[in-house]
Length: 242
Image (cartoon, rainbow, N blue to C red; front, side, top):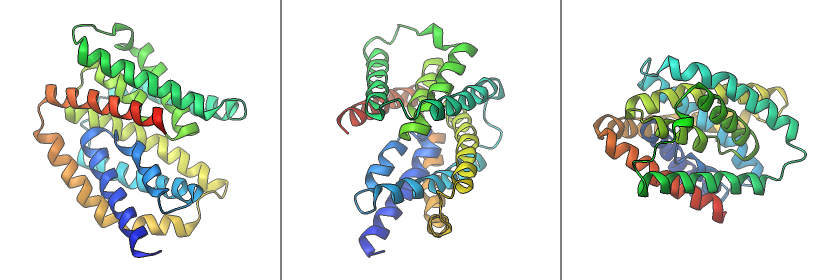
């Protein structure tokens, strides 16, 4: 790898570290397109998984046991169902249309929260909403590597505090990404050289994690939720124009 490629990977690693520990991975959707500036698509996608898992490990450690078990438990079966559904429909669904659906939902939800703050989406604030959004996350994560927006929408709708928001998202995505890692290794989709490359950037992931934790622990709850809405709007627009 040339110096430019190494610098780009280093930037992405720090970005993932900050994103995971400050904003529940909201910026992660930009990582693969950035890697693809210098790497082939297949290599960028393969490298992304171990980088995400490194970010997950550090975030879980930083917010250990600060997650909400009552919120987490309904998310797990939903995510498993989503991954299964994704593999059942992978040959018939058009990823372009799925990305368009995610983008539209992100934009509509974000604009609703920004412009009509008093309107509550009560149908999301229960276990049924948790299962639906986590299943949607499992599907979008498996098919278009965009599992973050559905969970971010759900957590924003119920108004979690910054630390509980990030902690619960961290343990949720850590579980899902570990399942994806086992599957990728089993099918020979993740070469050992790719895993080694990710591990070499581990010190930079720690730096990103420390910066993210500092942001998360000092930010006001209302400012955090407002920021998450603007990030969702940005994510929606990004997915729309990709």
